[in-house]
Image (cartoon, rainbow, N blue to C red; front, side):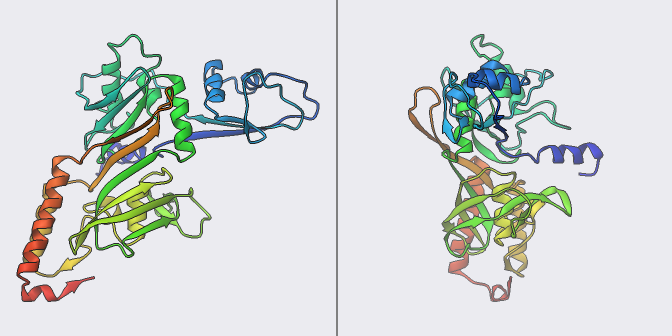
Length: 359
């Protein structure tokens, strides 16, 4: 990418997959008794009464660290904590007739299988062809949807990542699902192809994630915790192909590029991840045929190998536990099969040149 527009488009994709605005109020010693909802309506005029009511109902607003009802009468020195999901309002979204792979839908939520290459939010050089444009086109024929789909995306995944995304169709569903993300009770599992063999095969990566001070288009792990946001990734080896490995990752937090930057930090960048050094041979041999094999793999899947495979959550209205899983797209499965075949060939016949290995 060379143009300023392309660079801006890259920057616009660096956003947390779920964002929250946290506000705290310490009630004045001379404050008289006022209903909690009325107090907040006055203190946060930019947020509608409906959103405040939904946030209270969903437990996103606490008084002295305890959930409270709208009619609670605040007292002097009460400490009120408010957590709002950030609403990305934009009146310029153009509805587009883009096919959606819908996994599930009811009156409150929608789950889609996002295809690789589709941007989630319009930003910078991506003003059309996004998932939001597709949702606007889809919801445009449904008069029962309360809000524009821009409001309903509770989380997001990178452009080149495939897999499951949940969309809230009402304000209350949006707030209630956001609370689950905020409380880390959402179950999210990804699968990825990474360079090398993770050791141990089952582990946890903990490291604050923030923008790389040397390259603002990338994220960086701050080991000392002085910068960035707390991030935790649990990983497990699924299958080893000697030079690369298929792993699954469970997110405890949802930071920008979290899996990509954490695996890079652990010495196992995602296969063909250009931004984090996975688009070169990280582990392998000096054998020419091997180098050609890797290049063919890059051509087969010209994006980093990451797929949001499953999502588990509590339905925001019914309270029912729900779980969805979708297998990766064809290019991902073909890539894994190609490495599986290569490994079987390697076991059968090891060329003498293969003895000299790259670190």
